[in-house]
Image (cartoon, helix red, strand yellow):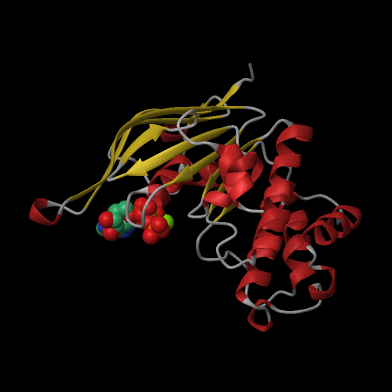
Length: 238
Ligand SMILES: Nc1ncnc2c1ncn2[C@@H]1O[C@H](COP(=O)(O)OP(=O)(O)OP(=O)(O)O)[C@@H](O)[C@H]1O
Ligand SMILES: [Mg+2]
């Protein structure tokens, strides 16, 4: 058994107030251990992104507590939260988080600068090769396709060797071959570094390599790992 790196206790999220209130996340208790690859599936508007952003401390839950790497998030100042996120979490948002005025490779050197360390050029090379983005290194985000931008964003999330990787539909703009490459990279990170990956996806074909599968419906999260026949899904692909 791994160590618990993500712990949500009775976490809920209500947006708005009065008659426009939306209970996007019903009280949810959820833990993730090191060395596990978790998928969250479920229909549009069911609360998947809400869960992930609350998990990353990007939004306050309405109630409940979030602990990442044994650190209770609500006890940190905004500044400390940002620093903690930088060190512990690789986050891939639905909208890509690239800096518009920096070339692809400079996006990575900026991370080195923020971390006050020398440029990790070998690591950049390795990540670029893994994601097939080497030829894009001198381009600006505005000159990339949606799928290319997405792969650069994935590279950035992997660059700090974060213990926790949270990915919101990381493969949405990728064709199925590239999507599988990304899943293989995540699975490899989980195995080799014993990090935890939580990935939201619409694509059932991508969950065959996940250790746990949860389904979100109307803000309610259910463990469906044993109910989903991954073998069958894998076979239906060929
Ligand atoms: N900032 C917000 N203010 C008010 N309501 C919101 C806000 N963000 C999300 N919602 C609502 O909360 C519910 C859950 O949204 P969420 O973005 O978590 O869904 P999702 O499962 O990620 O959907 P998708 O698959 O389309 O990305 C939806 O009904 C949505 O309209
Ligand atoms: Mg979403």
